[in-house]
Length: 158
Image 1 (cartoon, one colour):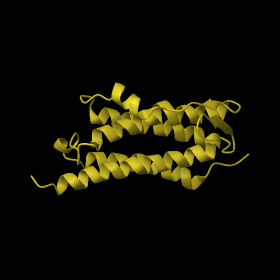
Image 2: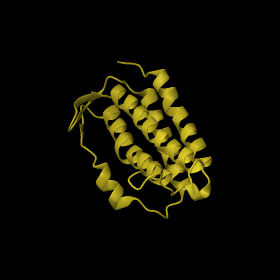
Image 3: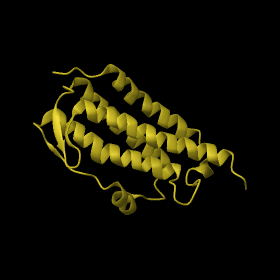
């Protein structure tokens, strides 16, 4: 049994606070603003984080912790976003969902054997520990995207 990585668990917990702080520091009129037409708004980036946390990462983590070598399907994030993102969904609802799903995920990870495997449809065999670290990296990627929106909005030329 591989014990949970306490550093990764701390990062996963801290990211909920970091994302919350970043979203709450955005002016209301910046939530849907995009730095460029091909980039996501903070609202879209946060919705993506929540959706992947809820429909991919949490599901994978729960399955890997409780099932023997479960198959882990690929998630088409682009199609999912196009079909499910709602411009009118309140940002605080999305944020609350993300924070709740992350807490549930961390609770499973705290008690799990991080060497438990799953078989990802594209990556092949992965471990629970690998998945936990991937969640950290994915969150940082989109947290930095939200930060770029805030900084670009603050320094935009009108």
